[in-house]
Image (cartoon, rainbow, N blue to C red):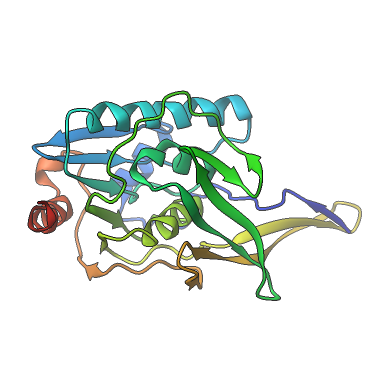
Length: 252
């Protein structure tokens, strides 16, 4: 038996509901970061990031980070993080890209079948480490209040590494989740070849936990369930409207 691709997070389109043709169309265009400012509220849509090459991981982490820092620098007081179009890929550039919205320290990790932590995600001076290995190099570090109120938008197309990102965000204080339950691929997998590479199987080998030690059984649930249709024009997106209303009540 040959084991391959430890902690592999695959981008898959098969779990996207057929009615969400807009999401399928957007995914086909490749990863597109969307960031806007709505008054004192910043909005960022984190896309799927199906990258394995370090150059691409660093590139998209810095693109996301630079966008967030640019909006942060004009003095926003709260954030909406939209993961509804994030079907997965690689969570490293996602977390490194929003490091300025997170506090330094433990973000979460993998828990194996023995209940022991096998790997730990951590921010050190704004850089992402897994155990003692720096996973991404972010060139610009923007220091701000890492406890700003945050609304996280999730849905049935939030999968795999999108769910990893969501789980990390559950460890923040002043954070609330809106939308629908995620797809249910929030775990660590390993691939195995059998029968002289004629058969390939992918097995779940670890669960995820957040910075508070809470373990997740595949899915992330919203704090406030809301049925809606995602819109590219945010002015027409009812879930964004609900999130902004809550954030307005939290800003000081």
